[in-house]
Length: 125
Image (cartoon, rainbow, N blue to C red; front, side, top):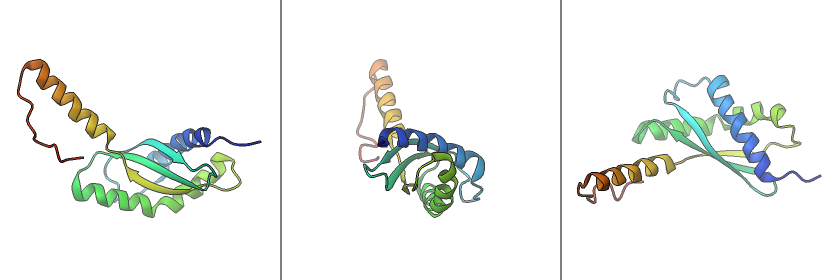
């Protein structure tokens, strides 16, 4: 029986979110972390975990570094929950889609109100 990477990714997303919320106790993660997406390789050996962080700049970088250092712990916690022979390696990555969506919404609000839409923040992402 072949396990589909999409099903594994969805299960991992749910389980990793639970582990980060309940089991991971790291003072460097003082910001809220949301798991937005998990992409698993076809051979199930590697997974990219996209997270959204309520932090900016240096604090975001510290939180991402803390998550990456905790990847082994998270992987160990995943093992009994996934029921796979081998748990994929994890790499945590920042997901900017929420920030981009908020920026688009702000631009649309300005257009609706008839305000000028400038170039401020164009280089950000």
